[in-house]
Amino acid sequence: MALILTFAEVRDGRLRRASLEVVSEARRLAGPLGATLTTVVVGPGSEAVAGELAAQGADRVLVFEDAAVASYASETYAAALAQAIADTKPQVVLVPFTAMGKDLAPRVAARVGAGLASDCVALEVKDGRLVARRPMYAGKALATVEWTGEPQMATLRPNVFALGPSDPMRPPDVARGSVHGSARARVTATAATAQGRLPLSEAQIIVSGGRGLKGPENFHLVESLADALGAAVGASRAVVDAGWVDHQLQVGQTGRTVSPSLYVACGISGAIQHLAGMSSARCIVAINKDPDAPIFKVADYGVLGDLFEVLPRLTEAAKAHRASRA
Amino acid sequence: MKVVVCVEQVPDTETRVRIAAGGASISEPDVQSWIVSPYDEFAIEEALRIKEAKGGEVVIVTVGPERAQAALRTGLAMGADSAIHVKDAALDATDTLGTARALAAAIRTLGPVDLVLCGQQGVGGDHSQIPGMLAELLDLPQVTVAVKIGIGDGQATVEREIEGARETWTTSLPAVISTQKGLNEPRYAALKGIMAAKKKPLSVLDAAALGLDAAALSPRLRVTQLELPPARPPVRMIEGDPAGQAKELVRVLHEEAKVI
Image (cartoon, rainbow over all chains, first blue to last red):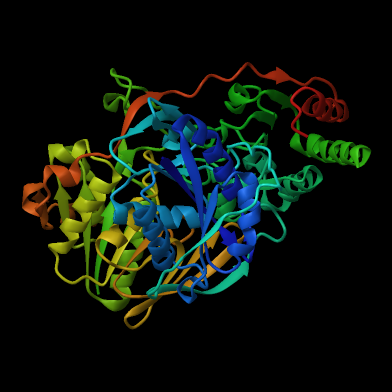
């Protein structure tokens, strides 16, 4: 029987949501592929999350908890996943396109000689084989990709694949793998940077600011609206290059490509490289004083007006909305 | 130190993408200008700074068709010492793993190297695969998406950003390190550098010269269709004074779009 292997990321003992999205999508594909589903979890706390993975649809959970994988290292984690692939010979291997997955998957693909499709946003089964859709040119184009040979390996963009129903009564079938050796590159320190804010790649709502804010001293208007909406904060390349905000916030072709359910662009004119990075959002709001700004061409809702008038009132209205639903 | 920088020539980020006849690639004649992938510019800049601080040499390598030589000349003009252009029709149709194998083979022709730098992603293909594949193929450690690199004696300290955190890594050298925006501010090539670049050594190698056979380069993954994203519906303008616009926007986002 065919097998789908997924990789689940555990950090600080917690499963990342993107890992569950991958299991959920694999469960959906298991039907048309006629496959069973094994999820590989590596590192401390792996066995503890087996129940959660089983509930989401994993038939078997393969756990690596050796000293060699006591903390994330590209080489030892790649060794674990590559060994799982060699031992189980899956038809399909799916990995979340998180920082860890993005670091790990290419090394594994090179080791096992697999074709790897990065940052996929849709998967389907055609004639018993996986077919993937992935953005290219930061979303200016959408590619359909097909594999020759196996395993068919793909990384999946977080926040795009829906979580199917979870069944807590599904018991986990846990197996253990073992990996040895040491890594030449290792993490020696980790410092939190986000100050309680969601990373752009995982946010359902993003509020972004651009040059229309006139200066870094006004960026708090965007942050206040983001707080009122429970959103992550983004920015255009222009304001990142001007040094107003950290480059980590940049949305667009040389920043993050994002697919939230709501994207609010404040004072962003909509350069083509910015539009590329956000136009796959489900709903786009543009607030701009220039009626000819290209951002209005991709927006679902437009507010023509002065940011300094609109944003504080929008923040108030969003807070009132939240309070009424609390 | 001997530092190798892998670069890719890509369409300018301002390019409006058009689909070629055949429907599986972009129309190259419609690309107004080709550039060094922006993430690779950070890699070139970092290599030059390491050379300026520690001495040594910088070698630039690319895999690509004839036009890609311009990317090498850009790197040489910025200050790199020599370049290798891997050019072969078999490579035009290969996938990321084939490209990584060609780069690895080209790097092996250089003898021992201390560091391999690559942009964290080629703008356009957006695969983010070459650095990790290269590290595996060369049996080297990797640190990806670096925003700070400190070179020590036989080792490097690297900072990288992950979701909500900044990690500090230590790696032995040689290693493969991929570069991210924030690492440095790439220099522009001065006229003197552009003139000097014309005289710097640039070797062209094909697949046979690198010992790569058809099986190594045969693609495991291919694009069967490339489309422009679906057009979005026309914008609906929210009218009224700022307070009215704010209230109406919150209402439609909740009741119609159902996103808040």
